[in-house]
Length: 271
Length: 300
Image (tube, chains in turn blue, orange):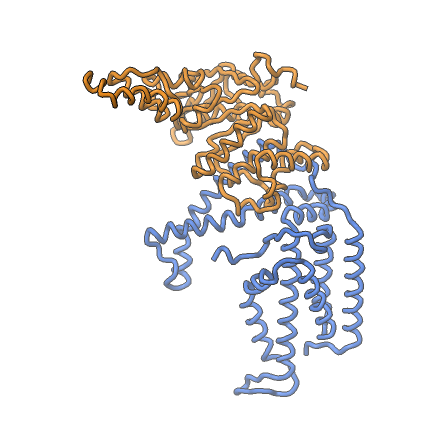
């Protein structure tokens, strides 16, 4: 179960997407996500989807991995699209009592599905092609102006780095503890919701205890390596904007212009 | 700047009559872990620090890089007092500490970024960090894994990454607190080979805390600790020939030493001490040759 979680997993590579400045990547991803919601009809949305398809192929990350990250939200996608199926006007295709499916409903369902899938794919591209350290590093720099308001930018970024680093470690440990408790006869798979939640307590307590021990060890290891906050700290990888980033930025502007154009000149899809 | 001291007899790390107590949380009593320990580590030396649980060996290691400050006495590193806060990072750069659990020491999600953590904290310029990281990874033979995620590596590999993270700070001394305790035999060999190589090729002083006797045998000098004091110290030969003393304090000796000791005790004519299997074989060979001629059977 643990192995299936791909969220926040980095795939090293040397593709065009990998080589972009992470700050630029974060901002572009953010812009694209906003524009996914700006796109109000199929023409605009399909422009975005075509772009994503291009980006996926460019990223050099096996497409299988993207499917995996979609699988994680399959339920959400199906749920919302079914819900949307029953709303909207247009020609009635099928009805049962007061429930009816219309052409508008079908088109809405398809539209929402493409929207959610695009959303997930965009954020997956970001996390697949950017190492967590690059990501937090970039966020630290983007958030730097917030220091004026006494926001502890470096500390937040460091916490994110450590959290990301320990996600796989703690998942592995959870698996181990679950197996250990099952070996002692713990039953985690049967019973109602409350019973199952209660069955998790013998997993969570050892996990908590060991997390504190890990935290203590890690703090010690960090101090041993002269960690003393963000002051006077340098970085191995200095971020700098290159021609590639300019190309990506121009591409983004073109796509955004196309989306706005489509949204204005074609009728809205959601009814 | 301190390279001039190489070869002098001065101690690089000097513990002068140090004591240390923990507050026992339940009984509110103080538990004395170190009771006036004095010892010195010379530059370039490979020292093994032995002792069973609670002997104070881990505590003393943490005083070597000012992670813990002694409650009495002083610790000097390269003539700097560990009590002096203004040289705290100077000391920690010179004396790196590697802990037992390799999983809990790695900070970043990518091997090379983790190795860069130390020099980044020291404010080393980016190009220099890159160079140091590459050198450190090559020194522990993990360069090919520089872009991997640490959690996908084996225990021995992770521990070598932790060592690389220390080497990137260009330390004079590495203190390793039971670095092989959580590793499988293969990982143990990997880590031990690495630290021996660092000691021989780069001249880095090594303090290896361990309870594996076969690891201690390979050191230049062995210090045995027992309940907060130094029990005995010397070359592995000198230390392990005191089999009775070690046994009295519930410490093991290497298996080869044990065998020779027992044979000697039952009256066989053997050399005083054997540390390795090779030495043991060499010692037993003449005896076995004699036995095959039927001579010794007559005596016993």
